[in-house]
Image (cartoon, one colour):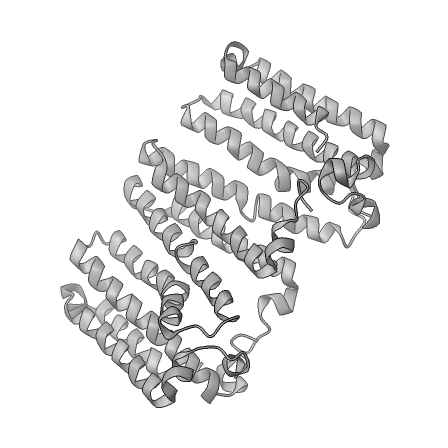
Length: 205
Length: 205
C-alpha cells in the first residue's frame, strides 16, 4: 500500500511495475531533451545533473546500500549516507535544476543544495518516526516494517524524541540556508520553500 | 543462463538485477551528456533519439507487448510489432546515433534505419529458430521456452524452413540498403556492416 492505494507491483504485477519504472526513468530524460527551453548547453548540463542524481552514484546507489543494510547492523553513518543518496540526491537535483533554469550563481546553487539535502534528511527521519508511531490508515502504507526487519534507523539509534529533535534541526538549517538567498527572502517562491520545509515536520502521511 | 553464465538476477538476486538495469539505463544518458564531443544541440538530439528508442514507445513498450503476448495467441503482425520495438528500436538507435555523430544527411539516416530494422527482425527470427533447433550448451541459454509457453513466433507460424527464408530475405534487404549508401560501398566500416548482417544468419549463439 502507498498513499492508501495498492502499490504498482501489487496492482499490476512485478513485471509491469518494473517496466513502468524503467519507462518513467527514461521519460524524464526524454522530457528534458525534447521540451527544455534552455540553451542546448544548459540542457545537456541539466541532463547530466539528473543522471548523476538518479544513477549509481545517486538514488540507485542509495537503493543498493539500502538493500545491503537489510542484511547487517548498519552503523548510523552508513544509514545517513544511504538516505543522502536514496532520498536526498533527487530532491537536490530538483532544486538545483530550478537554479540552473533560472541561471542562478554558484553560491545560490550551493545554498539550494544545502536546503535540499537537509529537507531530504528530515523527510527520511520523519518517515522513520511515522513508521513506528502512525497507523496504516493515516500513513497510507504498512507500518512497523523497520522494527520488524531489525533495521538501523534514526529511531532505533536515538529514540523517537531525539530523532524528532534532529529532524527539527535539519529543517532549521534548511530555512537558514533560504535566509541567505536574496531571491527567497523577497519573493513569493521563497515562501513556498519555507512552507515546504515546515510541512515535512507536520506531515501525517 | 545467458551466454553460458548465470543471468544477473540468478547470480545476484532480483532486487540487485533490477537496480543494475536502472543504473545502466541511466548511465547511457550520463555518458552522452558528459562525454559527447558533438555540439550541444546535436548532443540533445542524440539523447532524444536514445530516449525515444529505449522508452515506452520503443524497447520498453516492446517488452510490455511481449508480456501481454504470453497471455494470448498473438497474431503474427503483433509479434512483428513487438520485435520491431523490443529488438529493432535500440539497434536502429545505435546505427542512427552513428549517422548523427558523422553528420550524415537525411537519406543516409533513413537507409541506415532500414538496415537496422531488417537486421533486428532477422536477429529475432534466428533467435526463434535457435530456440527450437539448438542446445543449451551451444546457445548458452535455456531452449524450448517458446514452444513450452505456446508463444506465437515466426517458427510456430511459418515453420523452420520458411522462417529461415524470411530471415535471409531481411538480411538481403539490409545489405541492399547498405549498397545505396556511398559511405558503406567504399569504406572499411561498410565491410563491417555487411559482415554484421551476414553474421546474424550464421551465428550459433
